[in-house]
Length: 430
Image (cartoon, rainbow, N blue to C red; front, side, top):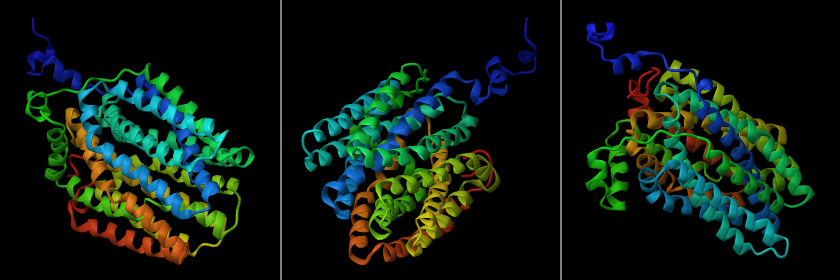
């Protein structure tokens, strides 16, 4: 005997699809994943402060700070060439755990060795290697979110994850600054190592849906790493919004990649404050990300992807410009918060767009191709920005960066990014 849905020409599968999915907080996998990422973010915030402080303490050189940042970016870019292939081929939960355990062991080496000696070569080896595993983790992380939540919940889930990341990071830099002052920056890096271990263990309790693979994906595209990577590039190139978005972000990454080093150098050297103040300033900055997480879903719903993304970077460039004119550490903290608020809005919108429009079996490669392409100029940018700060000063450097960021963002109005329409779905906005 036919059911009512069958009599009306609706299959049971279609009927289930029309039912409203349970809320995010009813999803136990999502809750566990959220807790794990919050813990990991707390540890990340320690290295975010401790590594530049350790380099500055050991060398006294802002240029070497930039070199370490640049080398880490190079390692991430190289890893991005094959990270998407790994993520799309292998079990994504195991990839997350491998990346966490690797970073745990790498960062544990720093405090262990620093107890006996202070070899800078270790920093140049460990930090870029950890950056490679960070890229692998980040690519996998992006593919996991749509495999845990429902399609209509992706932007909100990303907002929550950004928010908890910011909340954990808000106190992290200040605490890291205190530990660096009381003990050493190496001790703060050791704390980060422990959080990676806990994160790896927690991932065991998260169930992740498998990616649907097509016959094409398991056939010719999987013949070589090059072919699989190019599959992600081809998807980016064919998409009317992702293509110009990648180009614009390449320029913006070049300009902004070294801003954290500039802020640390500004607070310590130009304004003459201790390590603990650096921690407070960067903690204040992370509050901007926290605010962005609460606002991003509504902003995107109201203005659409294009206006949200372009407007965020215009405001970010304005904040960088003002940073160059600031002589107060309080104002620096407020501007850092404004910058991270803007990049939080833009970053969440950008990631949600890719997750929504990319087939699951391609998401790892598309994400890796996207990040590898737009991050390629980052290391050069970090080196150029810190060299400029050493040569002409932080003020002039920030003024130049701020004006250029505004111009690049406004150029997006003429592309597919600016032509996207308001609406809940990224697909509707293309």
